[in-house]
Length: 399
Ligand SMILES: Cc1cc2nc3c(=O)[nH]c(=O)nc-3n(C[C@H](O)[C@H](O)[C@H](O)COP(=O)(O)OP(=O)(O)OC[C@H]3O[C@@H](n4cnc5c(N)ncnc54)[C@H](O)[C@@H]3O)c2cc1C
Image (cartoon, rainbow, N blue to C red; front, side, top):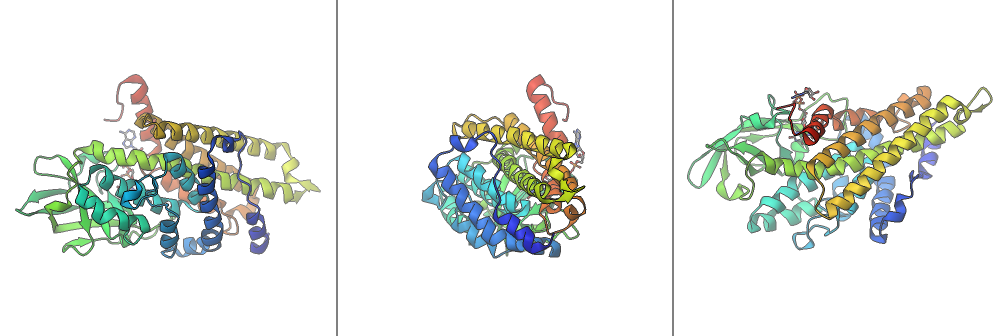
């Protein structure tokens, strides 16, 4: 099938909603979702394949993401945020990741990992200085927690800073940092002289701070990933987040981002399922549509079952988030479940498309490769399983 015919199929994208979750959404939620969905159709889908093939980040999308309020939609309006609830945030992430996990990652990092910590732990001056510009995308940010030798175990980090009067001197390095190559600011987690983990706002242009890009990725190719290198960087004390103390502050940001990932990866799964269903209904082999074969129906039936389960879990988690009752354990479970669901749906969808499934004429292979990063970042698949284990037994098996 050629690209033009593929585009015609995409125009008729039908969002799977087997359990009528739409009935549970407010008119505002539906409006938010529709706005982002149409924007993805218009701005992301026509270009994303090309950017992925070239391993480039589509910078031009930042403006639209800001205009739609995808950066920090849950931040109050007085700081430039959208003042929306977590259900709206989840729906935005679902629609963005239907387009591409890299675009959703950019929005997740900006909202949950940069704006959220400034809002939750920042001084009033920091909130006023940074949040409005981050909300529009005029400034972009990144989040530096992972280090070359400390991934699943960030508490062992070696990046640290020392007091030097009106400023501190920061040394160390962070690795695998989304948005790093173009970020204007970085939320950096580093240890003070008492070995306590603190959050600092490091700005591009500070002497000794560099952000080399990570090349050669086969996954999240349309997302810019890089390192953060700190070589005796003088950071003014006013850039330390006063309310952030200990790893728990960094982990609370990850809770917000992981919540968005649960919704986002479900969006990627919905796209793969919809593509596979349409293809199966039109592809003729042995004089009949392949959708009529039992083995294809098994694949499609299992896909929609798993997607429906993920959608219901996300919706319920959204209700709990809005009531401020969602636990880290529930968020871990939802992130892990949605990533696993999306990857299996992508793999089954790829099979249904046969050889065509490996090409860029369809989104499936791109989603599948992206999801290999998403199932690893913000806590690996196994670590999230062990978080559930710890939650239900009271015993940690990983630390
Ligand atoms: C594309 C991309 C973007 C990213 N963006 C960011 C970002 O913006 N900011 C940021 O800070 N980080 C980011 N990360 C880093 C990401 O969060 C880490 O890769 C992740 O936490 C895993 O760390 P690691 O890669 O060092 O793997 P490791 O921690 O070395 O884990 C390797 C394997 O060992 C397993 N393992 C480790 N410890 C245990 C244990 N106790 N029990 C059982 N199994 C265990 C893991 O589950 C995994 O399977 C990004 C990563 C990628 C790939």
